[in-house]
Length: 209
Image 1 (tube, rainbow, N blue to C red):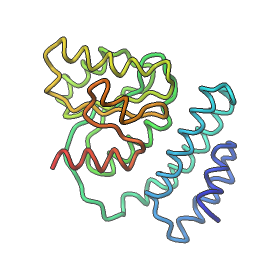
Image 2 (cartoon, rainbow, N blue to C red; image 1 turned 60 degrees about the vertical axis):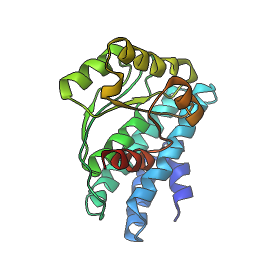
Image 3 (cartoon, one colour; image 1 turned 45 degrees about the vertical axis):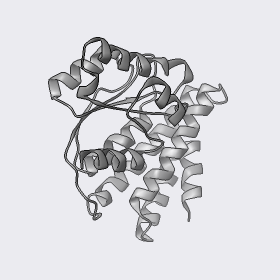
């Protein structure tokens, strides 16, 4: 029983086998955060395979269903881990034109586990809707996910809209997603780049202080 096996089963969309293995891993005292970290990497790979046309939407959906089943099993265990709670409000979503929200859902789970209040806008979100939601919520952070290279410019667009409206200094902008990088974050002027869900929770908690 291993995280490698669980990763492979999720990628193949073997839901029932994933559930059995996830329960076994937890019974063997595998860190639930470690499980989610590995599956975040798995779904990033699935997203990249889809972007490269190596797999197609049905395979992505099956992987997503398998992942969701594992998250449902792991989530109750996360609430019992001894993690330092942070305070902060986050608007999170996947940019316009991008329909991949599995990784974003894991980030949301990790943030909520760490004490953040999260408003999830879902996927295919208009750039201005991120800003409207942040204003309504009086958010501290705007989290922007992109899983395809073709939608990455939307992350930059949101930052530019914030500048145009005189709101750029009001929010910390966090970006993530398989094709993104620290170099891209620096280029567009994002405050943080997070390569996985646990990274997001830790870095954002540090900013809250």
